[in-house]
Structure formats: C-alpha cells, structure tokens
Amino acid sequence: MTNESCVIFESAHSTPMGECMTALPDFGDAICYYRYYRVPDELKPQEPREHSSDIDALLPGLAILEQSWERRRPKLSDDELHARCTAAEQALDDLLGEFVQQGYRTEMSTRLREIVNYALFDFELHDVYVLPTDMEALLSFLGNPLADYDAYESEEEAEAHAPVFDLNNPEHRAALKESIYMVGR
Image 1: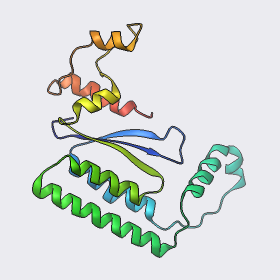
Image 2: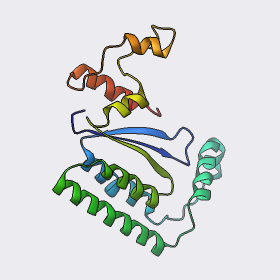
Image 3: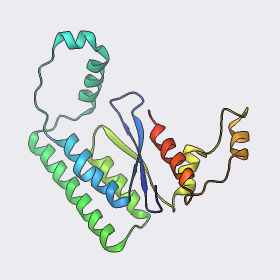
Image 4: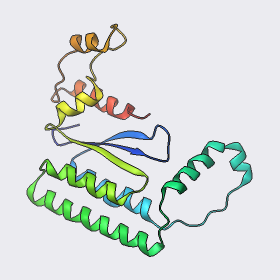
C-alpha cells in the first residue's frame, strides 16, 4: 500500500457473498486487471461442457451457482461476445493511455466503472479508491483498521479509542491491507 495504490470493490452476481476488495499498485494496474483478466475471461465464448451427475450429487451448490450464472448471462453469439470484448478492451486501452499520459484524475474512476459494468455480465465494479485522495471514503467503508472492536462495547467507542490512521506508517498500511483482504472472505 502506497500513496498511489488503487483499491477496487467488486462483486460477482452468481456467487453468494461474492464481494471482494483487491489492492493494486496504482490505477493503471486496476485498468490492466480488467483489460487482461476480467474482460477476456468473462467474455470469451463458452466451450460446451459435459456434467457428471456424480459431481452434481457431491457438490449440489456448484450446480446451483452454474445455473444462476447461466440465467444471468445473456445468450450472445460468439461474434457478439467477441465484439463486446473488443469494444471493452479498446475502451480500457484508451483509458490506460490517458492515465499514462496525463496521470490520474477522479473522473477516470467513474469511466472505469462504466466500462467494466457495461461490458461484464457477472462482475460488477462498485467502487474504485485511489490513495491518498480516496482514503477517507475507503476508511468510511472499511472502518478504522486499527480499531480493536472486540475490546469495546460499540463500534463508535472502539473507533474513538483507535489511533488516527496514517498511510505513511508501515504498521498502519499492513493493517489496512489485511482489512482489504478480509472483505468478502
């Protein structure tokens, strides 16, 4: 975690409790995460798969998740999926080029969310936090990672007794990283 780190908060529609946060080195890495991982993975044409009734019997939850995903995924042809993937990749490439040339601007987070949420079916990008600009919003969402919630009767009391978070303090950064990791796990 540094002064340029980017934290994304996303969820998967097909998975119960599918929320997670991921910390990345900077906003450019967040763009690349979607450009080279999420978009191609979700928008590649699906290969027909044979299902084993033995596996379905052993893991009924897996079959339910797959049915949920299939209901949510629009029935698009391979050409339509390819066109959607190409458009999303181009939009992400353009955003990355702008970021590299001009640096981060707050409206870029909104554009990243719009591109990702239009392109993907299963994943939704809820929030993008770029540090240090969005530190207050991130801590508002997560709570103070230094608060000892077990030692006090209320969250407010625990946060009132917690040290003020300092991104320059290595121990504070480690606590923040752990808090981010724990979302959705």
